[in-house]
Length: 577
Image 1 (cartoon, rainbow, N blue to C red):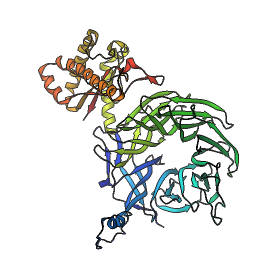
Image 2: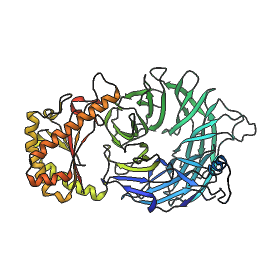
Image 3: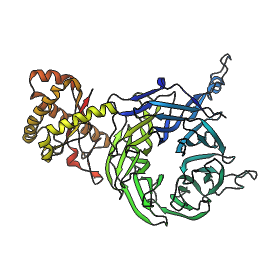
Image 4: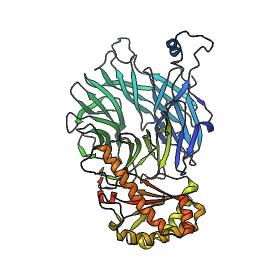
């Protein structure tokens, strides 16, 4: 069976946005997504997920007298197929292959092999499990459909130290005595785990769980070869996160429901489990609070069921981490989503070794965007896979991007070089202000005011005398420098921000009031800078200067919580051509 076939690449990809950030957006007919990502041995990156393929089974010459008959004839003409995308360091797609199976399917995980090939794990839409082994060029070596006669679903494919893989998922209870795997089931839905050798041989396949609904979510191999499995158990009255330790042969050592909601009525959903360098484990969970708003919960534990840390990260907006990885210095990065009433963005979050929040950033457009997976690259950069939705679109697109280890977006090489030169010149120009801690300049050319005297009071947008005095000197130095380099300047953004509070109003008015306030703060700074320039510079500024209000979308954090004083600010960003 031929699993994958080469597609045309250039007409289906958009690999850089207007700011030249490392962002690969792959447009396909109907919804598409990427669910896992890995680094290749040649330093390229590969992601897997699904896109839609067309089945040519309709009869174009047939005449239909009934609209419903016609709809039935075309309803199976397209469906999801596993897709693999490979991208180089210039954000160019160098390989893209699509599964051509008779049954629609999705890929959920990719694992590297020692020969620079891949194990791909997924499932068919009618309930079978699928594992394929590919060579370095994504050519099929073998593929296997497996599972029970009932509906099965794979959650993840886990790399093992012997070169094999572990498929983790769920299976509906089988009552067929001729079932090749199970004579009966344990409950309505069971944890389903299958171990493969490096050659693709099934070593064992087993079910676990209770008489209730059990779903296998993820697993990780411990240093001693045993396997830690995280799952959920749901009954009519409660839902718990279940942990299980297995021997390498799949025999259960212990089973425990030791992570529960702090309020029994609130939902807890596990997403990922990883082994840390100190041989402890961290699981990422989505915790719902009393008003059913999700936020992030991280639990660290050891091989013997002892909880070492249990942290909840409360954020202004509902948030969740879909994947998490550890850097060599012990810090962790998680990726997922953050959403308000009308928009969902990809979330990147940096945590210290005690699971406390250090920094976060949001990425995406005006619609639905989400990060599903990350991999830490050899140079401590991070590759991320997910979904991006264009403005005014209803279709999701496959999305690959790269981040720095501090969660900021990576620019393409030529832009990064230009930014680096400007960054060096700006830091020299404002060396005194930086030394006095009046401002900081980031490598993506953000200028952020850090002097307390430059923050705004709650509800205030008019400039104080201290702010005006600072801006006179600041704008003279900045605009003179930028004007001398005007052939390189695309935009000067002046962004107004607020803290998230506004007493006595609902969420809608709180957002709108703060949006109006943030725009007024932006205009106050913009107009002060503009008025201080001569006519020649004003004419130039009119073509590059841009003010915007961000409401409380980018509040500043201190020890994981909103710092209201620092959030009431205006900052600038210089965008180069």
